[in-house]
Amino acid sequence: MTKSELIDLLASQQQHLAHVDVELAVKTILEQMSQSLAAGERIEVRGFGSFSLHYRPPRMGRNPKTGASVALPGKYVPHFKPGKTLRERVNNSMKKEQ
Amino acid sequence: MSLTKASIANRLFEEVGLNKREAKEFVDSYFEAMRLSLESGENIKLSGFGNFQLRDKAERPGRNPKTGEEIPITARRVVTFRPGQKLRARVEAYAGSGD
Image (tube, rainbow over the protein chains, first blue to last red):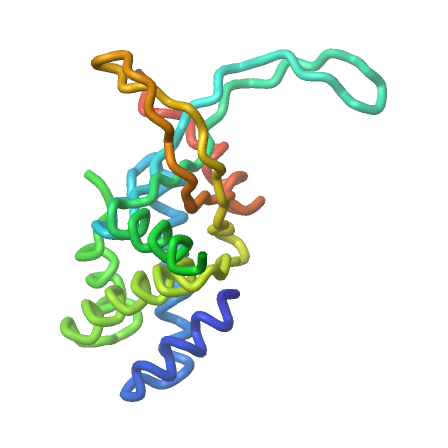
């Protein structure tokens, strides 16, 4: 499912909302989630999961073209931990397939 | 402080103009749509944010850490998140809380 398919699906479920408003709402949600993480703030959605930042310490890397060593600074990367409901529903769906 | 469904709904009320009830309903429908997609075996690609991908894990040997007893970890399907380029770049710039 892509962002535009998600927008179309939500628009079909929320008939009282104009398609452009659904589109704006989805983009607003994603932008707010990105802003939170960029500011180092966690996201917690019960039943879906939580997003947090994981620190990657500085390391020596290599330029794959020249082989020269380069010092890479420490950085943060986004991390998602699925919530209990999502974990269970996804795992149960696999069992039903078999 | 962390971002919650309530703060997302509040932003939809302030910026998109949904009323409070619509905003709350929308946020619930949004996350339910994502769960249903993953539950139906379909990955999610949100450009600019990231991809939610399903991975099937085979059964592997495990141990009860308390008793040391060997018990198999059953085969399972899990959700992983791969942040997109844009989100990675925005988060990388975060300097940390200073600790």
